[in-house]
Image 1 (cartoon, one colour):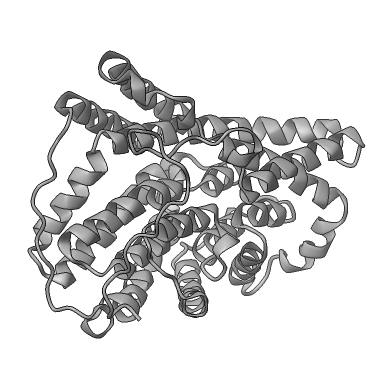
Image 2 (cartoon, rainbow, N blue to C red):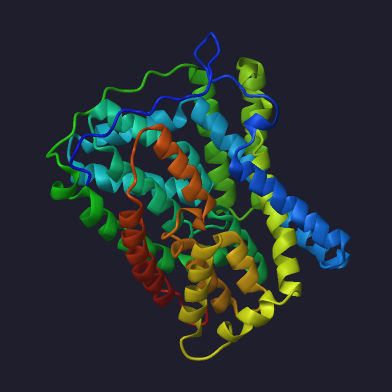
Length: 417
């Protein structure tokens, strides 16, 4: 499938300005179908509150729970987007390819490590939104088949999102529900994370990276990436390092992300104010997450919790059963509402079941493109770069990886959760 050279990028049908940048559409034309779905979800949630389906007290508690997540999400995306604009990801990706010295096996290990680290520290959406186009552009420069790199980003974005609370929004919810600190969370999840990445590496290599799949023996080593504004590059590196250190030190992630993002914003005020536009604010994600935290509790009030309760009990095989239910529901709808729906029926005082559910909704959502927002964002980036994804092969290989990686990660959970 990946033996043929990558297809040229698809032309962008949107109008452009005189400087070659896409012109910004006005009015409702700037809203796509997914945007309207997100807005509709929020409106539906508000209607549930206004009609009394969702009690006001429950709605207030749900929004209060999600508020720190929204602050973190906004700050970390601003940080990551400005760092990308400053060339930090391009410099690192090019250095990774240079370190590979034309050897595909070494490049594979380096790309897997780079994507895993990006996912763990900045969350899976950063890997999908920012790292995917960087690696696809690098593929064109170095004559590397694009599909192996593309699949590395999407699979790693999901399966490498277990280690730290910042790696995935669901992790923050799970840490809160299980009553764990950042260090306690990482101590319980490092073994499941290693198991999930190991299985992902095997599926990636034999599915996309081995010689018979990639269709080339060696790749052309690219030249170093030219650096534009070096002070901004250093500011981006410093802000990202500060963020990583703060997270590992156990500081509140929303506070650390806000401080790091503010540092980089100040640097841009001084050197590149043009980068500070309203498009940095991820309003689509904010609307989507807020809507979910109103709609899912309302559905629980309407009987969803009663339907899920029989699958969430204790006993032999309960952890694997909960993970399987989370993965199946996540592939049907989306991993975030799947997590919140199943979490609501888990017995209190069982952190092991919460973490098993987390594994299912993080690692097991690889079959359908809508199962995680990161996969949808990745798919759009692939479309823009002309990388064609065969749906059946994507679902079959993703399903196999989901089953094996979820089982391995649940088995690696420490006794007592």
